[in-house]
Image 1: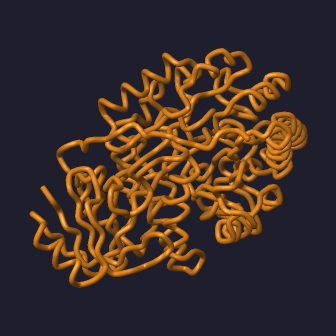
Image 2: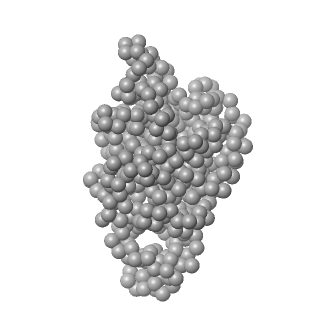
Image 3: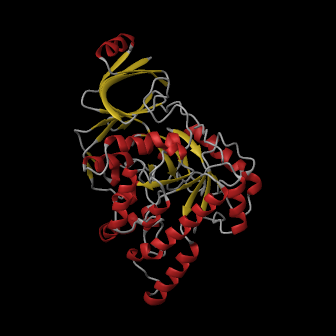
Length: 454
């Protein structure tokens, strides 16, 4: 079965050109931009989809999601969240290790791989979690099958806070794996918490959250991670930057392929700022915290100028009941994978990013940064992970229709100026005009071919 996506505006490889894409099985068989080439593809096609007026983008690759499977599946699981992902144009994801049990042993990692093979609607990969005492397991990791080693350098779930300096030195010096870090200084957070509790008591409102998890907490931890990476020549990727100050640690004067230290921003830090706490409260409580308008605008600028290399979600669902309480008790995190591409396209329409930058940060650069072959671009011979977007229709977000298992969104009530029409995963149509298709697509485990330590 050959499907021709005909007459779309293709956003790819830094260009926007009208053309057509022929899907043959799991792959892109051909891309045509000249009328005579498109006519040839039309003769080959079994099905022709008229894409006039639509954008055709490569599927997004989200390098940071928490699908809560196993152990926390009352609020999310690999099946429900991967369905939300493809509805949002995310065709591949990399899941984080702070589940129950945590993904800190090879057996736990393999169990998640097996589970995804059974139920995921998107292509998948799973980070391995580092702890103070699992160096033996880390040494046995197959780097082609794992996107990297996740280190929590601040408060985290269970045994996953890595705060032993000797362990950190050994990890950074010994592993060839990409090291992805959550950077918040636990000592700064504890001091800030003690200070505000002593002044105002334990019932601290949400406005105290970015004061407790402060700029200093983020910068100090990120700076220490960069120092370790520089010292040992390690491959470091710092996740979910939230402050302008941290951006001084990153470069924009060299291409991504030459960087040993890279950075990610998440869509909530690009969309919200601390004035939104008044309106949205705990719905926008994340770690790291959403901070000032100055921080948000600096992050947007860093996406534009290349200091930030990729944009992801940190999709981390909780039930709304778990989000109740004050700054010290409400759960941190929320669902975003279903609306991340729409959110970035909204910022593009507002002039913050070009369409080419959106595609680069959400598809091209994740594929390059993690060494994922044959994905992230619209090219002949690549997997047909594709998204059709209507820039002339709207999409209103409502809690009642959110696909994430938690059943709510921090964007409830917002109307986007774009709508996702179709998503293809490995050539299979999985989402069409607001409806998930009945058959799960033939998904694949992602392969990672990153450059080794120099």
